[in-house]
Image 1 (cartoon, rainbow, N blue to C red):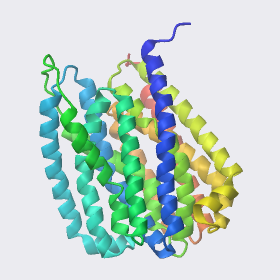
Image 2: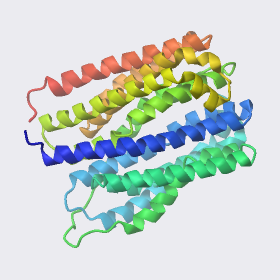
Image 3: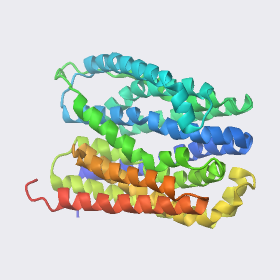
Length: 404
């Protein structure tokens, strides 16, 4: 049986991204573990709350990258040269504006997230850079330059690791630890953007649908809440302990979703219901394999992981490794399904994300007296989200007969 060349290339890109994503995930893991291991518990606790905000503040980067990928992928023979210059200036201005607004609410943000006010300027700068840094990678993904993007991600992660090491040697400088999550992406954008050229024959105007950009930003914001809002809402009495567990879980999650941008790029260049569902199926299958293998791995080597990661601290969290790993695997599948919905401009899915966000807030407010109850609440949130997402896929994409 002859395999379609495009399917073969897609599978190769998935496997390549899985390998490089594993290296990148390991470095990111070491970055967070280094903070837990080589800084005080107070600094780690503050960073834990701040990093929850960082994940939320970088949502614009994810949505802008996605909408650029979609715009470039759907526009054949597009004028990249004009598009990149116009986009860079527009989104730089937007970033500065939103960063300034964020600073205005410094006291409210610091009080809500239980962080010192001196941390907020670094968070505001992170928000500003989130509007600028994704321009180059979004264009490259629209052209399906998967290898190039993987190498850029690797370079960014190495630089992030270096900045994190510097921050730790400076006594755990929290502002620098936060900016280590944003500066590398900006530098890669400034290096790569001038290298993106347009062929003489490619003169078609590339348009960004700003209405869709707003919708996809809201969607990714709500999609990210299950693994960010918990770090902000969890009681400070056991925040450090729960954050350590969350770090282990995120090792599973981020390893499982490394191929998401590859799928989004393929779907943005692909047409036909059967082909799109086949692409989704291949990606979800790989996500399940990665998530299952990672969960089994952290269970088998739990003692070694705790020793290397936390120096013997937080040993009680090992009893939750399997449950939390399976939760992260479920969530990784949800992330793939959500990216499929967004690539097809299906934004009614926002209602499902809103319902699960409200559910999580309710559970944390009224049923989170200890770490065991928090883990139970997360199981409920992730299971609910997965079930509703699968039902949304079935009724809106599989059972519909009016699509090719």
